[in-house]
Image (cartoon, rainbow, N blue to C red):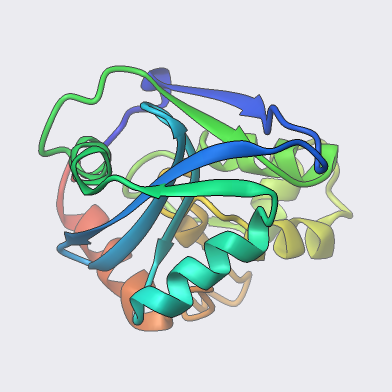
Length: 184
């Protein structure tokens, strides 16, 4: 798994009316199939677990309708292997979208250590905004870069671990794996 020190974050570098290229591809992981979108090698803008390739690609295209898309399975597999620890990925850049607040939530999630779980309240406290629990939860639910931005490590105050954009079974597998291992 990529370590925090291997990850840089930037705001998505294009205006909504600009045309740009996204390379994408599909890869299998021990947790399920993923679709990854890259602005260029090592600049991740999208990583979703998918059940259906066409639906996954449609989700990617809805995020960035102005993009020109090129399938690159070699780059996708190489990047996914780096994320999940099969290869040394060097440094990766995450291209964050959303409001300034949402991006601050994503950066805070990167501080959650591997194998640990934080509540939405914990994340709000990390941000210095203890009353912002609901906006934190909304931002977590909109994360488009799964696993690397570890939204799966956020649980409810009651301890419930089963809300996850990509399905409770995937979240459970990720959390069980992380609690039993030092890294992916």
